[in-house]
Length: 205
Image (tube, rainbow, N blue to C red):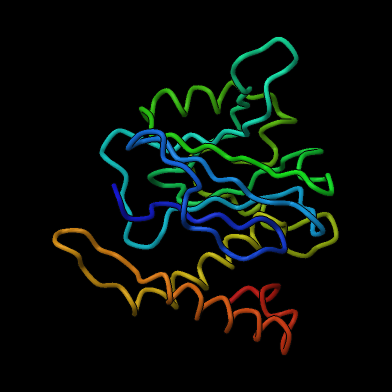
């Protein structure tokens, strides 16, 4: 699993595909600086062509510094992505708001049953920002104002990226890969399209 597996999109920031640390072959840490531009939501998705091992899913954690007297940092389970739910958006609450702070997100590849059980146990308020490993139903596709929800917009961004990057897919041995430069090209073209047609993501095509 040396190739990138996941993409992260902090709201208003570029796509991140390279972990800051890889403590183990199934554990990935992403340190996301949050200096001037703060964010409260983040999208996590499987990169095009990536398939997790059978019976597993990716558990997403928010890592926070240890409390006074604690030796280890704290981790808060946010939800998961995997087969049938390849992307999700998570609300980080008040994190990422400081001038010189950073957000650390941890992703662990774990048994799918364990991830699903913890997702089911999340309270309704905590799980509102990350749906279970099933597709979003039609009633969740629109916000109270009639426009698409943040989740739907995020899914459309990912769909746009997938469609663009699919043509760059190649193989390294038996593994399907996408060059990182292709992500840079997609992001540049995507930003240009947003500037010229800001409402294109709100149209359901």
